[in-house]
Length: 300
Ligand SMILES: [Ca+2]
Ligand SMILES: [Ca+2]
Ligand SMILES: [Ca+2]
Image (tube, rainbow, N blue to C red):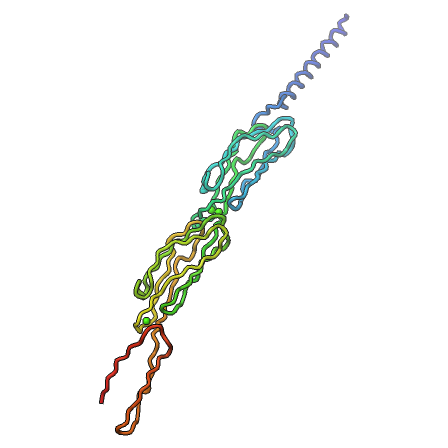
């Protein structure tokens, strides 16, 4: 082999070595396998909605998307976290690992909320929980948390603010729910004095009534008491002291009891002949269920 040929071979070997090195660098940069490093510029973006809002009892399907398919798998861990919503009370605990297979760009998990019988605090009908996303491999994620808001679905209890009845009559109070509930709704009520006095003007009550599942209306009866006293109208209160399974905005109603004593009428001036008898007729404005006693005396 002459000198010129040796030089040419040496140059070719160097070029081949350089090309091989470059190829190895490219393979290395591309990962060379399914196990991609975290936060690589060559990984797809993992995206998902970070906020959902549902009514209690509904499920949430959270979909995860990759910006493009890859030849490697993408995986991450997820775990529900309590905020104002509680595990087992407002939502079902969920945790695990999700893998998006090579060549696939989407996967999802389902979160379940619970249709319970409890009412959230009146100033917070919405509760929420989170899902934390951790240990993302094979993709880049700019977010790591999802929040799920849950609207309470308990119905609202309502009734009239005022009732007027005649002394001795029953007061019919209709309690209504804004919508039927799938659970029992309990209502505890008690009466209290206004200008009227318990067991003189009305019969004191302290009781509980229940809406069975599906029921939206209950009528309860309160008793007023008859007396023989002519008096001004009196009033007392119907109070809601506790409700289970429903929301309540109004907690008190006024009951006005009208006096039912009749007015007595008679002619108050007579001119009669000496020695004759004056006949005075007394009339009641209306008939009543009790006797009316009138004391009279002559006055010259
Ligand atoms: Ca409910
Ligand atoms: Ca609820
Ligand atoms: Ca009376």
